[in-house]
Length: 121
Image (cartoon, rainbow, N blue to C red; front, side):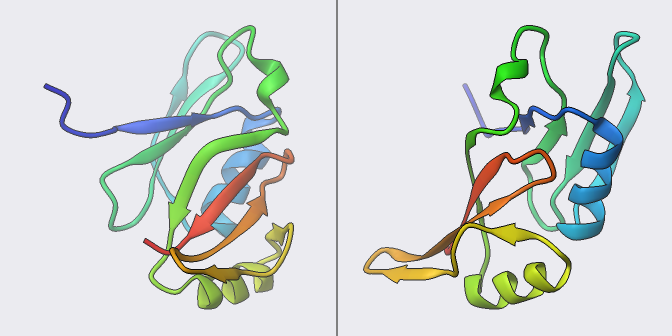
């Protein structure tokens, strides 16, 4: 049976710029970076301390997904602290963190305009 999620794919325009954003600004680690199909590389990143990673790859025919809200939510032990650290690294957010009955969250944007939720667990 299914035991977990290995990675989620993030559609990007420029893999090199995306690699820089996800490693230098978000602190992810390169697990795999190799040629794929002559047009793109297979770039798989790990999130320190997590089992699930991300792939910076756009399947052919899915280019229209670049720059949209992605159905991915990243979590942090302290959203407000992470927000401040990421802002200092140049990450853009759509609004400051908001606390609700279920937890705290905010939405950040990558180099291509893809939007992701940053939330408490």
